[in-house]
Structure formats: C-alpha cells, structure tokens
View 1 (cartoon, helix red, strand yellow):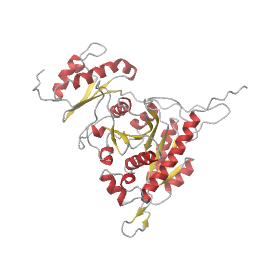
View 2 (view 1 turned 90 degrees about the vertical axis):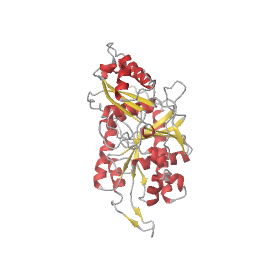
View 3 (view 1 turned 120 degrees about the vertical axis):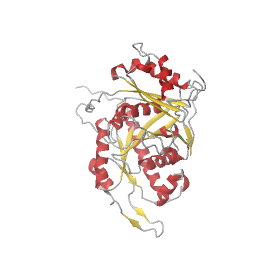
Length: 382
C-alpha cells in the first residue's frame, strides 16, 4: 500500500480485505460492513450482525479497528458492532415475597450490563425531550458533586448533539494508552471528560442509527481509562427511544436524574423518562426543574416565563424526590457558551448555589441507593 495514497472510503474498504469474518469471507465484501465514514483523518465504520453472533464478531471488530488504525493518514478509528434486531420489551421488575416492587429511589438496581472498572457509581442525567438544558445541568451538577469532595467524571453520551466540548472549553483529541486500545479521558476543572465531540469535528453530522449510537456509547464506557471515580455522570441523549432504553438496560446505572422545564409539554415528556427508567428497575434519584424562572439581569426582577413549580408538583405526583429549581439566567448561558460553567466562573452566585443544592440531593439519594444495595439479604422462613 502506498504511503502517498489519499485517505478515502475506498482505501479503508480495500484495507479491510485482509480482515476475515467468522465465515472466512473478506470483511470488505461482507454485507455486514456498512456505514464507512472518513473525515479529517478520522474513520468511523459499523459492522451489522445478528445479536446472537455478536460474541463471534467481536474479534473481527477489533481486527478491523487495528487494520484501519495502521493505514497511513488515519488519526483515529472507531469501529462499532451493531445489531438491527428490535429489542424485546423489558421484563417486569421482580417483587419480593410478601412485598411490593418499588421504582423511584427506594431500591437498588439489580446488577446488569456494563460496569466500568474504576467507577463506583454511574448516574444518568436524562430528559424526555431536547432543549431543556440537560447538558448544562449535567456539567454543573458534576462540578457541584466535585465540590462535595467526590471524584467525578462526565461522559457526553449525546452522540447527535455533543455539548461537553463547548461547555468544558476542551477541544483536543484524547490520547491512548501504550497499547493503543484504550483512550485516556481529557481533564478540566478537576473532571474527567469524554465525548464523541472530542473525536469528530464540531460541524460533522453524526448520521448513525440507534444501534451504532449505543455501540459508540458502550465503547466510550469500556474503552476509556476512567477512574478512580466516585461518580460518572452520563449526559444522556434526549428522548426515550431505542438508544436511551438500550443504555438503561445495558449499563449498570446507580440511578437517574430527570431534567424538565415547568411547562406542561415538557412535563409530559419527563413523565415518559421516569416511566422508562422505572420499567428497567433503575432508581430515580430525583427531578430538576430547569429554567424554573427568569431573573432580569438589569433589574433583578423575576418572571415565570414557562410557568413555575410544575416539575415539583409532577415529582410529588409520581412519588420521586424533587431536587430543586435552576433559574433561567443570562449568566448561566454566557458562561456555558464560553466554556466556563457557572459553578466555575461564579462560585458564589445564587445560580451556583442552586446547582449545589441539587448536587446535595443527588448525593443523598445516591448514598441511600448504594447503602441499600450493600445490605445483607434477610432470610425468611415460612
């Protein structure tokens, strides 16, 4: 292969001729190969297989990634193993003898899915819809948890609209460990950070199907040298579709924080978010009402633009903790756009105090969930 050959999709596909599928066919001509994208020296491709054969194909995925990384001109490569089969509905939560199953924050999640070495607890920050300020809430919550003495990481799992690079003021590409198989998270403000936005250009559209999204998130969990961390905050994709449900089912989440604005439309979607996590037995750590009220930067007057108190009332109705209100304030927006979250840029402000209040509630709920999961089993003789 010539070192002067221009990096292209055709060059990547020809390189994959040396990689063999479990059936002995060249990957380059296998119908399983799809979605090859080459941009600015970065290569992304997917291998689509039946879920029952995923284990047999993992070696093919790894070999393909190694082969592509060896191509001259390739800066980084991400090969995802995807499956198109629709997921079965989640099984109902098991109920204890002579008792009742509980969602919300009263029980601990059953062990399942991905557990990340070096990470004590993983929490999801989710919303039923986009545009409610979930990413801004995620990074300021992570920083406020850091200020409570915890070691914290932040994973941007919003593949289609990664915000963490902009919010954190970090733009460089992650380095890898000596063997080239594990990425080292970037760091800023005392947080460990990872985002697909560190691996692609800001204006590159991510035209990926749901299974590709979940595979990429899985790799950012398993193939990143996290830790040691007390908490990994995951900024989830908005909504309650396949990617979100798969994440909830396949990752060993300690709990979820639901972000909503006060108006009725957002609350309907927040309800769906709570219901999704409860169906897969993940404790709800609480609900945050974002953009709760507007504070005029000139006169200091307050306006309830989107209404007020709706998320609090909804949390009470659903029987989940209400964590607090975050105002809609010009300073939060300005500092987020500047890559200096309000908890960093103005630590003594009332806005930062609101995030700290939420973080205290999250930590308390997480402590309850963690201690519940460590309780010894009680033997009942009938």
